[in-house]
Image (tube, rainbow, N blue to C red):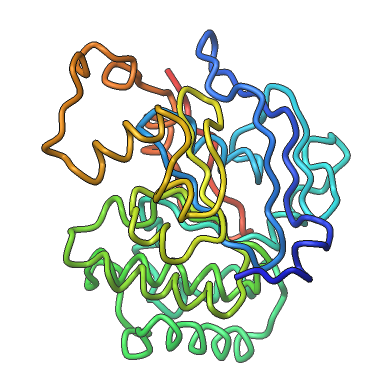
Length: 295
């Protein structure tokens, strides 16, 4: 959570006139946004609105077509930028858990530490156990991913990311692949991170979480930021009709607007939803396999 002091500091992330196209599909249309230290920013919107592509551009899992993205003051789109160094300060949690199935929970949380950060095995294991305890899984260190529920696997993914001591956490729909009864434990971990001051950029469909935890909510549609502000304003009293219609559908599934079946909302499908299904686990060098084909 931010304070007035942190909001006056330079942004952790600064995005200016961001565009992204997949062929003829113009997915992001000139986005401007900032994320400040300790701030929790939640991005909401219909499927295909550009939310995940926006998030993935921040650490260049998707390369922008044009525009500027600064992380910690460094322009990540600059060809001379050391993107691996930038990524070392970011943790990312995907829709899918992306754990190494052949490694134990503990090893999943230590392999990037020893390879990328050059920590000793003892130091890496201590850090991993600390974060497994934080996510409520200290008793699962010796288990393998196949022995865990989906919610437990996602919490391991969070512990793995935290073990790299990130300055920024990116969450891409972290609960969307979970059974409803498993969502609560993951959201509880994220709430705790927020109260501890972690800077977080969260793409989510969990409106209650966004209302409770976010400092700011961004509503996207059609590759544009339609509305942005405090949760009480964007979710509680939206100014834009498009935001209001979306929230009415999400919060009251029985509500149907006249002609809703003919709207672009019902028809739009974005390449990001396909790409997300092909994201590979982080490799032993701390790199994410984000080079998804869009064939």
